[in-house]
Image (cartoon, rainbow, N blue to C red; front, side, top):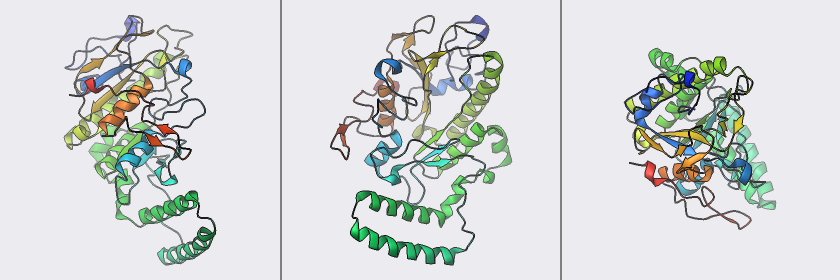
Length: 353
């Protein structure tokens, strides 16, 4: 996380950045961008409410697979681009699925940002691909006439969208090798750095929603050494992304969210910190949020929320509000159940300028 309330004095340095907030020592560059950001103190409560992993961005409760923000945004706003996908996940295989929405609402997974979108060129040539796709369309037409199910229709639409993307010149958005050497050097060679560079290219070319994963935070031991490596990489890349978006005039129209599944305990245990779902911080930058603002507070030890705690659902709704979604409008599932973005939680409108 960018902003960490660590009670251990040895992890603190002097206030960093024009906002004058105190950050952990790994936030040497990201702390300098604090004047661009809102820090939100979240009250996780994931044990009480049985909200499962990745509850902040991809809301799942109990055994019901809620639609992620990817799908809800596309439902309300439509596709963000004629050929490019509306949502992309980077650095891990996507298990978000499509929720209760059609298959085409699933995010496109990119496992390695250096490789970009793989296997877009057929080894048999375009003429053979066109012939085979024509044969497939004939077979599907016969089957579709007998089984007029919505899932069959969604399957065919997914294939058609894929073929359009494979033939599109917009594929260049996935190629980070086209970036200037200086830009690639600033983002660095880590998967997270390359993933954020890819994310910036995708946003720049019309993809609406990009999630970039960075792992390695489950530090139950050797926290000092590992945090320097993982936290240092995150700090440098995050600061670079914010600066890059601003220099290209994209920051005001792009909400950058730093989120986690839960926090860490305030006390050390075996050289690390255990899981702590009661309180943790998230960071928002760009997208019309106030700059250099902290919303909410934990107690002095960082154990529990003390003022203006924000639930995962409310953070979810806040992101949706920034995207222009009507968060109080019901989405009716195929089973006839009314759902709302953020599970009826209200957005934190006070974080916006």
